[in-house]
Image (cartoon, rainbow, N blue to C red; front, side, top):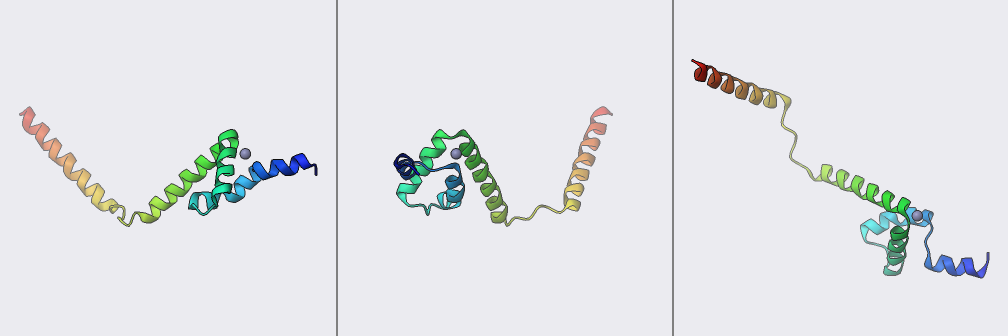
Amino acid sequence: MSLFTDIRRLFMLSCEDVNDFIVEYLDGTLDDRTRRRFEKHIANCPACSTYLDQYRETVTLVKEEADADVPEPPEELVDATLDFLRQHYDDAAKNGAS
Ligand SMILES: [Zn+2]
């Protein structure tokens, strides 16, 4: 390994490093120096930038799902409501036509 490579490694993260650090980065537990290097790599590497976006999106979706303690309305209720509305509008249409 050349001195140049050593120095480069001090300042640059590889895509693999980014992969390793992504969880800590999103958790906010990376130390400042590593976080800056991480962000620098992301800014210069479209592949990792896309990867980070997708990773973040997935994490957000999973979190939202976990946070949503409001259950989906039961299917019967949805059907009943739609039936009621359909009936209501049918009647209204009929009344209007007569
Ligand atoms: Zn990269």
